[in-house]
Image: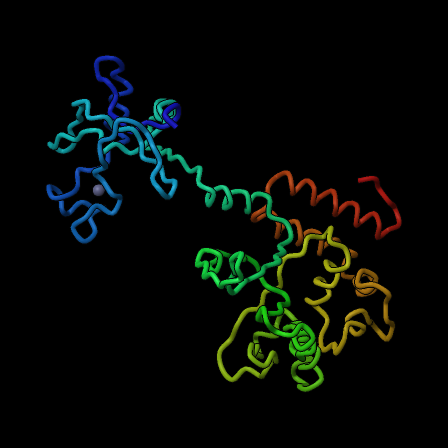
Length: 326
Ligand SMILES: [Zn+2]
């Protein structure tokens, strides 16, 4: 940490440029009792937690947050008539500070949470989770032990969910599987609403929330009494095969009561969703592929964009019976 990040005022005599850069860009304050009107002051305290403590060596606190070395070496800078010491230094990297001569706060973020955060988004593929929850554990003598850590899970699932089944750990698995709602997803309930309501048949799946509300408890679509909502279908990359073509069809097909209906067009039931897409002319002008590339361009990395382009070429070649090697 000390090699990259500093939180001290450098020696003026040794390197005046360096000293001046820290003085100009990396000093917080003045704030605190002397400057209660400073923008960082919230409820009479500095919201950025300055001033920090003097410490002789860098360490980490119990939560893994860094505590940077700030030695009490008598060095100060003057800001608006107040002498400030290293306790007011915003952590910086010397090289970046001198190269860009700008306020660049550099922090040590080697906590598992930040790693998880960074890599999740960079390498994000299709989401999938298998989760288990246990009520309690027992020790060697079969005494029940309440293990609060084991009982508490810090979980987050960032995605649209598709179909989930929730059950208690002592539920009989047969009863769970026989629950009528297990087979009923928001998507398959759409088929039922198309049987029940004529005006549901006018809507493609994506537009269901404009005229219907999803009743979570009974897992049914009911006509919307008031308001308006915008629907969203989760992203499916073009390389996913049939599921991608199904998603394309969901933007246009109206009123199906089963999967066969989605594959049908002008009285013909096509063997695959892809064939149905072609029959409907959805892919003739490459629009779906262009949309897929546009959509991914908002969040995808360059490398996965290349890959996506390759997949699109491959899919396109399959469509005209020209198979390119990937
Ligand atoms: Zn402050």
